Length: 274
Picture (cartoon, rainbow, N blue to C red):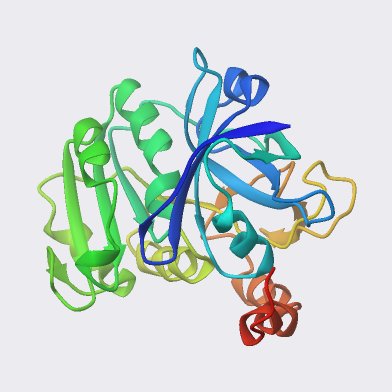
């Protein structure tokens, strides 16, 4: 069993959870994920690692309360336990000295972009973070990201912090920067990553995304997480989850993500306790 150190909502519907998982913390690298299970008979949830402490043996994830399993996860308190925390899984994000890197995070992606931005800075890159949200009250971890980035840009749809706009304004943001951007990394919902990739394509900037696919075992055995990248079938869990955003078949990915939408809505319509 894996003891919960902390589990709290940081902004509406977005939660940060830290658990005791020494083996996962010991091997964790930027961009990897772990499989969490909130209860013995519950489903397996893939969550990207947002931080870890190998010495303390803890890992931290940021998740969105969106369905039955994440709703159950959100009810758990410190000192309670999880039956499953398996990882680290997936390939780490490729970290090198690229020059200037733009790290874009939205929603839970604000948390998962943090270890990637930190590693890129440690590798000698100039790191610019763009945090995207509908409004300023949905932003979090500003201090953590400001402590490792050369610059943090805020992009809110209502203009309550930073620039007024959304991910569709990314090309405009890039053009206003005083330096050339050599690589873009996008983390967040699939729409953010798809739209962000569309923005960087005409600018011819290498753009990496962390795909959110349907997933079960996370080790390449079930094939549920298959995606088409550069006209080839890949498994997001073992071949990724990081891919060139300009090569992903976003239409296919979006369609596959809709497979269980009715089932995801059902627990939100009932008043029965979990």
